Length: 353
Image (cartoon, rainbow, N blue to C red; front, side, top):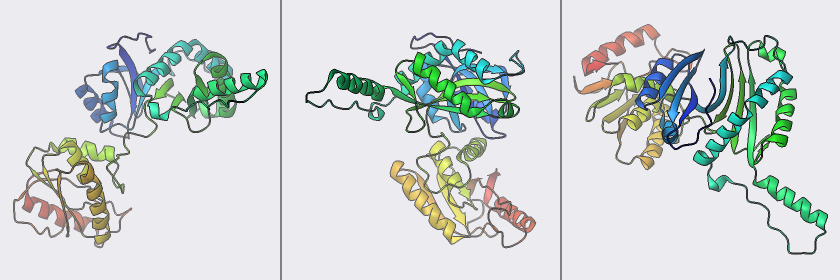
């Protein structure tokens, strides 16, 4: 699969999204909701390939179940006639062959996602008598400072890790970019954009990362608990409807409640936990979230899931992440907690997830 270098507003762009283990079917459904076309030419664990209209690219930053989104310049399954003894040199040849696609993807990223506030301003010239050499050197430095800074991220896994020298490969890529790609400069830190070279036992991919921060890092969460993408999958399975009362009887820091409120804002949410320190963290999370979404209804109370202090049948949905007894200590046995909690769930609810 290779990207087509067309630049009309509604041209289709090859993308790759990454996700946690077990979430791939959910991610595929979410992508279809965004009206992208799924591609099944390449099968890779934790990755979904698709084509999306260029005009929809920014909408993909709202995906709930995805970790990262890449603009793909080149991707190919390792079973598809790639050299069995791939070296730094012939990987560089591959990169040179795909350089027009790489440049176009970088240009696309610049047009769609480059924030003017992040541009490095050229140094101001000093109004003093400078020699021609100094003026030339200062102009060269200014031009260099105006380049978009690119970090080359090289990820080698499986058999590739023993076959390729990452440091040598990075130096070769830096040299290639410096001599060939104008307007972009390879740097080690403080980059504007990341260019990724991924070599695994399943595929080789050249791609540009849409955003440096994973989509799973939610701005509205202060203290992190259950991973947000897992929370999102649980929320989507729950099919919460407007006006419903949703209870998380083991809410911890409230990560599941916040994700539910973000996806389904017109329901009423109640969080409960037996640990006051967890409730305190959840309160801080809810206060932080409500600064962004003031109309969201989230109430917190200290209580025991084995004796929920609510009137029978008052809850529409119970949405919770039961403990495994590893990260958080359980006072009683897990089997007793599960058994008594389920009795309480059945007493308080009409539908159960």
